[in-house]
Image (cartoon, rainbow, N blue to C red; front, side, top):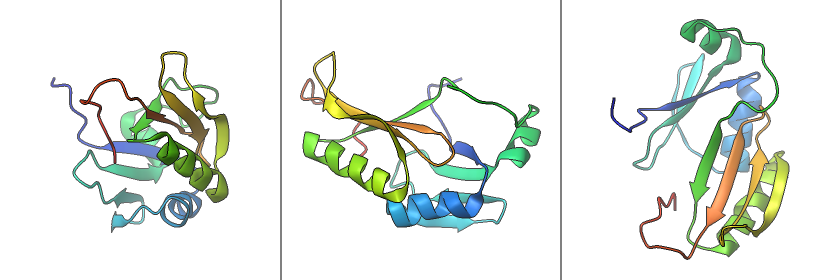
Length: 137
């Protein structure tokens, strides 16, 4: 396998709530809405989509039950500390749970994190160390 992700599917409890959070709250644009799944405009990156939690669990052969830290963190790297602050504020206004307010990180960067309404964790970060960052914007 190559180190490549073709798409990212997030299992959600409430499709309408998830769509509202990401479209109205964070400004994402829907590319395809299939009813049981939704995909967003990817802007050249791996597409992100939602699928009903029960349906996605059945599709991959596992139980839809689960709680706690899944071990999955979605990382979003930006070009300034100010943009980290802006996104954290947008997410909180949209209904996210702020897990770690934006601030200095132990390794010298700047960042924070939030959980969306389904508990998916987004880590936002900025670092002046290196020009080859995997910038999302």
